[in-house]
Length: 113
Image 1 (spheres, rainbow, N blue to C red):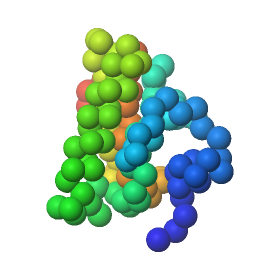
Image 2 (cartoon, rainbow, N blue to C red):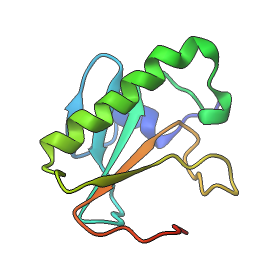
Image 3 (cartoon, one colour):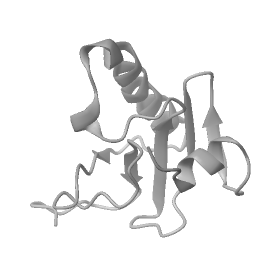
């Protein structure tokens, strides 16, 4: 598996505006935000994409969603927010380390993309 920028952020080799961290996950502001609040939530354990997740990753995946909720509350997203997981090239995934985009503080259009 190749090294990603997210692995370097986890190891603090590349700076990031970290807003939350625990033993399993890290959340930091996106450097190219698509909304006034745009935070990436990543597992510290490398999972390439949601397609690469297995049944043994279920607890970690649940933890990531609860982390989204925790960070959304911390960021004051009481009017709502969007969570996006891009998967694969056609899905718009550019970093092959599972990550959840938390977007908020603006109205979201539908359909996206």
